[in-house]
Length: 459
Image (cartoon, rainbow, N blue to C red; front, side):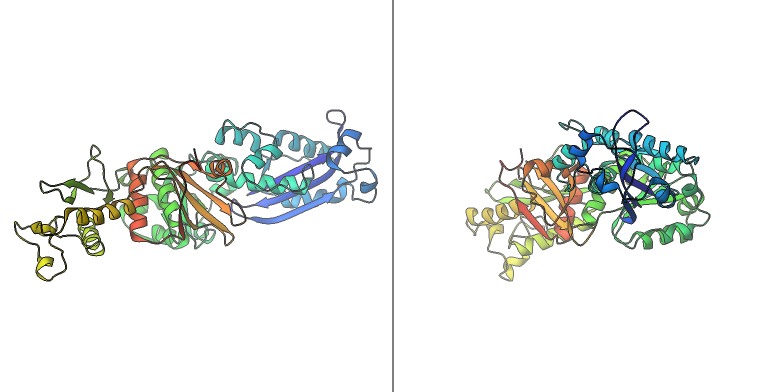
């Protein structure tokens, strides 16, 4: 659990500042579960430059509560939380100083979104809160007011959690929070997870990730893990001390995250999933008569694949469907082994390419239409699907035929702005497994929308 906060002060000498405004959002890693904000009477005048910066003046604070009057609420809302702030050292020092004056020892582990941003979003022109969130397309109202800045920090931290592919933030959080490591029963772990689509991470007592999985129903999938009696499941049940998760909304993003993060983190119990996800691929060639043929082959990285398949049976079933939908010849797609006409020609469902009766250009044009539809080579496109919340959408960016990554955006945002688009995308590896996942998913399932971008929209 995190307490994400922002504090405005009177300014002045180091360790002599007083709090003028405070805002705290209690955040469980997915949503805000509690919040508190208040003006505070610092019992000392505000420096003129601070008044100009924040708009908070001495008159506004005359009847505001003093810090000792809100101290109990601050303690309650931050209890059991790691404190998160933009420049956390400053906010932590201010709070610690105020509590010291009351004779109360206030100690919190902290995470700083400035440091995390520099690590996870490198090369930004500025890491000041205002300029950073503006670059990332995060809305910010009431700049230099505690509630507006804290709310923007919540959105920034949520984005940083999504960009943290190596799960360093979560691992560090678990190490700093021993109470969270020592869940006594597996049922307690299950109870805290949602029945939603996403990726889940099993951690051992040290907080290290020992298993990564994805599911359309995380709670149900964990129940299967923890009730299964095979050898692997029993080992996991003994090792696991906590489970964290990331909702994705989109099953496609869950599949891509699972594949990438298993390769990067190499969890102890994911050995089988580190291997390549597909065994066969579909290729094309022109025969001696000039017709474009399709062919199922064993996966070979040296050859360009139209699309890939998890096994031969899946490939063959898909090719039958491709042949039927595009009115292709079963002989030329390798589904009917004959030196004469194919079976479909005898029932008048083939136009005769198998016996060179159909004009080459007409047949090849249908093959070309299929290839352009199935391949995203050299294309700039966005795959839009469901987001984590009702008002959100997920987006996968394909740039010049290369899978660049995924992100999430609010329905009110215009994502055709190239700079904002790039900033919300979490970079991912464009490996063969990722291509297989995208092609296979788009072949089997519907997404909300596919947007073709002009080649100069995203450079």
